[in-house]
Length: 331
Image (tube, rainbow, N blue to C red; front, side, top):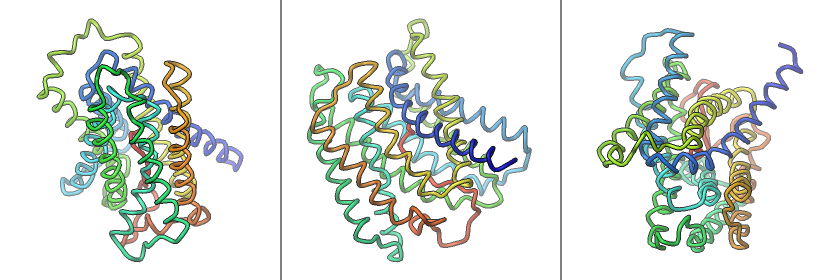
């Protein structure tokens, strides 16, 4: 295709990961209105993984070796099962915008984890400043977390049981994202992504079943907005947005693609305030500003490089392999 057409495709793909991933936090909140958290997330990712795997196999049927599935399965458990499972659990108690802001700290963990893995990835002074600022921002948000409880009846103790697992999951998400760059070259990229999603989704389904969520789920009381949100999360939040993200990693620089990490929370906070009157406080703005500026500082040294050092594995890899700097997935 011509140059203009390519530019249009890149613009549309950026719009998808900026806007769609930013809206998934609110969509999760709506889905949770009548569907328990682990079953909701499990259904979302299991269905999305099956649809994507079927589509990929129809377009390119290949024989997959079992040894090539180990890393996608493990990273899928860390990113989908723990990452999105924690997000779904947390959004029962805290607002969608607040959850999105906590997830925006992922680029900070990416730098720290990469630094711990190799001294060659030691960050410069600007990046260190970004790390300190980001951790400070998260600390401010955590201290004032009680203001963002959905219901005061749940008690402030639920802050620990919602924010704690969510923050831990962002660290595991970051670690698994870096590991995801080491997928076997013999395994087509979209197959690996399908296995990631399907493994994590299946684990969430099993957790929902064995934790007793099936007994409290009544199909007859599932609201229209919950059902519509589920469809949106499967088709747009998981399949479309994630595919656009992976394609952009080939069409643009990783640093530019990573800018979604500080656009998503802005959209999530605004939508939460606009649609369901989620609070926006002064301390929230200060903490959010610290996190978002920290991400800018961390990404700036790599903005003009084709492949930033913090994402470069020890062995040469295919350019099409994914680099992820997000929660949930969004969600």
